[in-house]
Length: 280
Picture 1 (cartoon, rainbow, N blue to C red):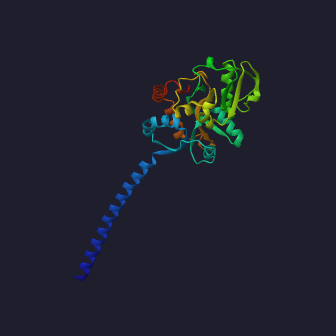
Picture 2: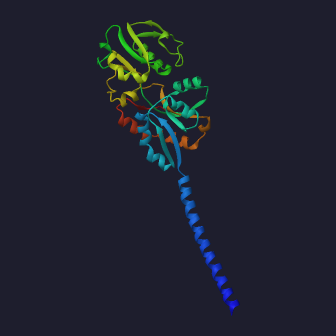
Picture 3: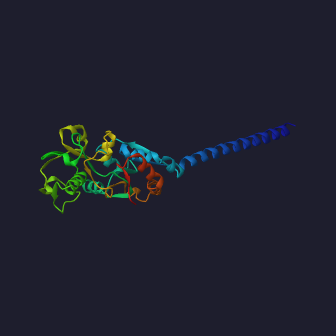
């Protein structure tokens, strides 16, 4: 009798253990499904300017989510560490430069960077707190331009197009400076300075050049420019990556979405011509 009871007891224990084991397997499978679902979302880290860059990325968030892509915008306030963050792999891509700026960084830092595609263009513009048109500028007008080579190049090319100066035809976006001015066709004084300081000191100048995104952030009426690049500007803001991410499929999908008709429509409807979709 005791032997029968022992057998029955052991059978019950075994059955219970099997049931318990099945329960654990189910829990594990459920947890695994959750993990897989989370794992299907690729999180990409980025540094980008606040306006319009982060706004464009946020406008595309639903389209990106449908492709399993989520963006982690690490910073929207530019500082000198952004280039290091990209090169050191702290972020997956950067969205704040155009090709000449990228090439300048490559030369400065001794690295190789890649453009994954242009998203938008901000035609480079000249503004004034004192005058409403270019023709109102006085003789010997003092004009502030940025001292970083790629943006200085753009400002000088606009001044040349508008008939103020004649430039050395061999000047490039890497070596641009006022030393490359061969002749002043209209008397002006050009002041080179850090672009971050131009808008705060705008009242000190008759006119000044800045990136349109900085003008937008400062609530400047970007339709009230004195002169600017044409809408065919070659300086599209690009998605920039290092060698590590040049074949990243999630980034490729993201670029396709950012170049889509839906995102182009957002750009055209929200920036009154100050920002336009890049040609691609």
